[in-house]
Amino acid sequence: MKKKNLIVYNRNGLSELDWILPVLVEFKKNYNIFFYFKSEDCFKNISNNKIIFKLWKKIVTKYYIQTKKDFFILRSLRKIMLWIFRKDHFFLINYVNDKIHDFKNVYKKLNKKEFDFFFSEFDFHNPWIKSAKKNNIKVIHYPSSPKMFPNIKLKSYKPRYNLDGNLLILNSRFDYHYWKKLKIKPPIFISGYPKFDNHWIKKIIQNKKILKDNSKCTFLYSYKYNFEFYTEKQKKVMEEYINNIISIILSNKNNKIIFKLHPRTKLENLNKIIKNFSKDQIVISNKHLYELLMLCDYSLSEPLSSVFLDSLALKVPPIELFLNDILNMDKNLKLYSKLGLAIPTNNLKKFNKIINEKKKLALLGNKCVKNFFQIYKKDHNDAKKTYKYIISYFLNA
Image (tube, rainbow, N blue to C red):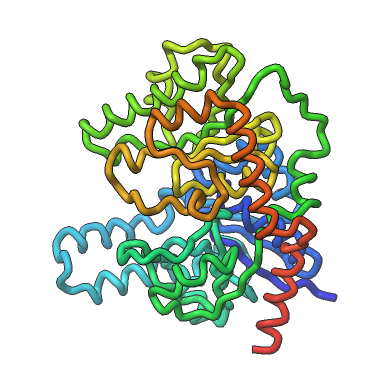
């Protein structure tokens, strides 16, 4: 039987691939899988992770990495037009934009003229979608992470863009009301969490015997602080805040922190903060999150991080941090603690107390893990379920 073709557009590297990869493994049986990377940085972000890159190479048929030379004349013309015309003559700018993102360019780069599906992460307005649909390619929006979007009655808490695809995949029923705030056009499918499937977690950790140091209490710190987006005053507050978090944990010599950096986070500020702490108690790592969680007793994340659910899936209790409270920003977006899925803290005093009351910390942590597995049943095969739904939905559409 001749295989069909699908294409995945990758804009952010590892995080996007990490979610969709187990689903693509199911597609590989009947489809040739092509990738279009927005930049060299996207590709490097994946290739730097040996485990995911190895699994990805097994399923990919062909890929293309967009370069700065691609569409250079048209992109330069668009830039000039935006500068000259601003909002006037917007139809001319759209015309140039459509020329850049004509799917004929994708066909040429990948030497392939027919695709059944175009997979695009759901949290940005993908300029290739318009042309994909004109070419009768079914567009599927998918999550970039296992992040949760519960129903919160804030006008500002809503999707940044509407979606023009043919199907929207969401992680859970908690996400539904958030996306419906914009009266999202495509029908919605609740997939569950393919990357939490037992067989997939085993692939990631590769059945390694990971030696955890039980003599120490190890905290995984999900470090995603983009200082360039804040004022100088806010930066100082953030540095002091992070310094205090580290100080409280490392005041106990039997405690250790593993920093897991977000792919787009710069090391400069972190290096500045940790230089006065013991090197024996701090590790900075780019390993896959699951490998690191296997070494840890707890995880630390800011309220909107996607690490909460990853952590719970590996039975590592998450602690919800409180930079939002310190900066007085988005204080209502403490999603996971409200659902009983994270240990809440809202100031340094409370954080210090919880960290140093080990029995209470363990009790609260175990309760969070138990709550998670009441929502998410561990015997799921969400990757296969998602694949079967997509095929069935478009077959009967």
